[in-house]
Length: 346
Image 1 (cartoon, rainbow, N blue to C red):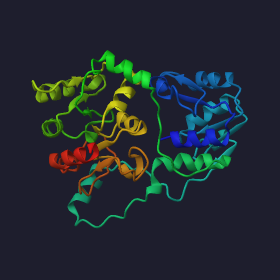
Image 2 (image 1 turned 90 degrees about the horizontal axis):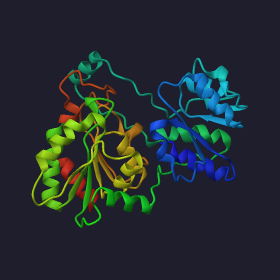
Image 3 (image 1 turned 30 degrees about the horizontal axis):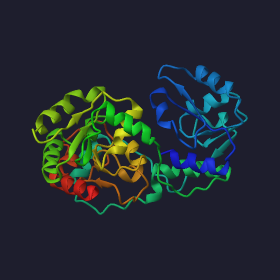
Image 4 (image 1 turned 45 degrees about the vertical axis):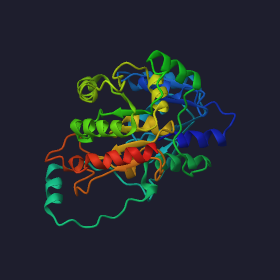
C-alpha cells in the first residue's frame, strides 16, 4: 500500500536516491522496483540505536516517516537526518521537523470489545454509513507525501517480477508443461483465525471450481499453515488434476513469480493477497474481522478483485479471534465464492 506513494515520489524526484527501510523478511519485494534504489533491512530484535546508526550511514537529506509509531520517528532523529516528515502524533512530534495534520477522511481502526460485539448483534440492524474510498490506507500515505509537493492522486499498488524469474520458477516446481488454467489458493492468515474463511469451505469451493474449469490449484502458505494446506491438498486430490501444495517451499521472489502466474488467487486477507494484487493478479477474498474499505487489496474499487463480506453487524471488529459464533465468515457461502472466482477467471 506504500507503492503508489513511492511511484509518485520517484516521478517528482527522478534523480533522487530513494532508500526504503524495511523488515528483512520483506526486502526482496523491492527487487526490480523502479521507485527504489536501495533497501535497508532490519530484524525484529534490532533496537532504535542500531537502526538509527544504519540510517546515519546513508547521510540522507530527508526522511518520510510512513508509520505512525513514536519509534519510527526516533530512529530518523537518531540518524541525524535534517528533514523528517510524518503525521502529527503524541510522543513523537518532537522528533520530526515537519508534522502533517491527520486527514479529515481518515478512519481509525478500532478493535471492538466482546461487550460491543454482543450489543451490536442484539440490536435491530441500522443501515451503516458507507465508508468512502478515500478512507483507504493508500490515501494516508499519499496525503503525507503531498507535503513534498508530490501528486496525491491514487495509483494501483505495483510490484514487479521479471519474465526470467517466472520461467525459472515454473521449471523448479515442474509447471512448465501445464496447459490448464493455473489458480492460486491461500487459506492462511498470520493475524489470527478471525481472518480465515473455514477450511471446509475452501475445500468445497476448490473442488467445485476445479470441476468447472479443469484448473490446477497452487496452494500457498507459510510455516504455520502446513496442517491446513495438507488437509486441503488431500481433500481435493484427484487423478485427473495435478495440484501443487507449495506451502513453505518458496522464497519470496518465487512466491511472487507463482502469484503472477495465477489467473486468480482465492485467499484470506493476508500478505499474499496484497502481493498478488500489486502484481496484477485478480484476488477473491472473504472478509470477516477486517475492512476491505480501509485495507483491501489493490486500488479501492478495482473491478478485477472480488471482496466479499457478510451482513454481520459486528464486522469489522479487528479482532484476531471471534468471541461469539464467527458469523461474519460463516455468512459467506461457498456458492458465492465459487461464482466470484469464476467471474474473475473469465
